[in-house]
Length: 248
Image 1 (cartoon, helix red, strand yellow):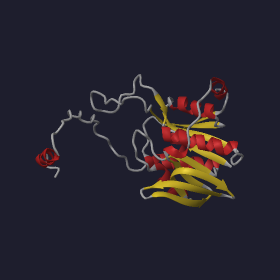
Image 2: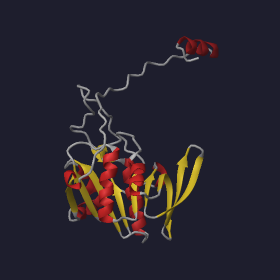
Image 3: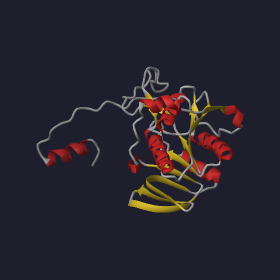
Image 4: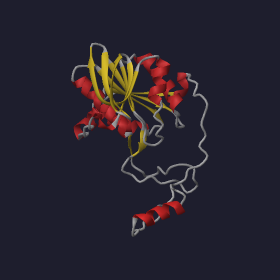
């Protein structure tokens, strides 16, 4: 069984995000970029499945500019068998990403597509659900535990009311939450081995997909700075202050 793991290049979660002076986007020049943390967790789980003998091959895929190859090589260093880079000049929106992944599913025939539940830049949490609809296969999202047996996946997922357990037939689309696992550290020998692993490049235009209706982002703004706090002398003062601000 193959497991396909899409990963996204994002600003590292430890970096303080800054908006460009012209409001056209987020500053990325000279900024550390990494694999989206949720995608890294999905990759770790896929690698553990392979190490347990439940999968034969783990394939990482990323859509974007040439810079994405850095994150693909990191995925290979973690233990993925090969990588696919879909070369795209512009950032793709969730529906277009789902359609690209659908083309790769037709080519690779994976048993599982394992994604992070969302990317930390857009926070859309849409791609996995859209892909399951296009593929017409079951989905289990926000997984905090996954067990495979007899062609099925038993997934414990986090919902507002607590935990929910689903059993889905494979092939299926799975997406993970933060508590699924702790990704491994990449060692220097593994980084050197990753340089010899195959990384295929596919031009986005060659897939012949319809990107769907585009969403246009007109401007970016940094959140307003928080004002200083005040210490009030009593609960009544707090109530009066909240009323003055129209909050009560």
